[in-house]
Length: 339
Image (cartoon, rainbow, N blue to C red; front, side, top):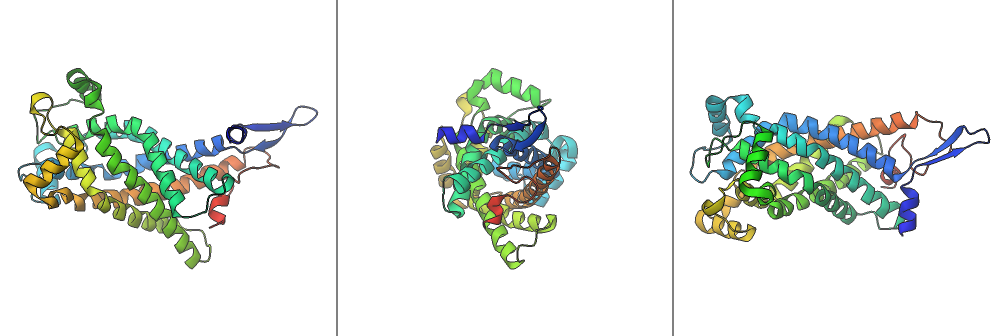
């Protein structure tokens, strides 16, 4: 097993008698790098366009007293009181700083896991593989995502309290570390995992299945960016709604006061207290905003990723004369052709 992985993850150049490069063996590493680059581009596009909706969602979920009656009311008040840049785009720097490496890790790990499972371990090509591969990818990406999410959420709800005013992303990181240590920086890791692992797993599973069904209807005609976006929208929206209760718990855990003012001792305590004091429907507070944020965000990220990945594979295929390939970089992967 390990010998196979090492062999397939090594770059392979073969040379003729004169020393010139004649062939180039495509490797898991190269495809992983392409997936990572495409994932990074995708998250920049999606986060920059959808961050204001995420800010509104965070404010709706974190409020314990009714300051905002809904999305439109929250959006209007934030812009009036704090402005678009300081209000709606608060925490964007932190989101990008953590989101870009996280997405690079998630997409590359997800696709590599699928390739290993489908093409070399003879695992049946079904939704369970996409689900597990998505979960593995998300777990690997959490190490960079959680700190950025903590900083972003605190900056996004600074207008609600509890008495936090951060001048910048680096200032927020410094203050949180000085006052709360690593526990503060990684606060809410478990609820974040409970939210994001099933979300990512469901999103990739829904996306791949819907893409396969649509391709069959279209008789294997390549899907356009718009069609990929529509499929991504549906996959992201469904996954967002299903996992919203975990998002409420995560947001409250990450944005609560520190020290003796902490309201929740654990994920379970937060969940139990929220339901007891505010009712079970409180777990779906901000669900509309979450769907309206993640559905188009998924449409953008998945569509941009697919197109960027395809472009990079075609570009790479023309860089060297290739007579021997373990993976086809010039078109859809063998994985897609087998569906």
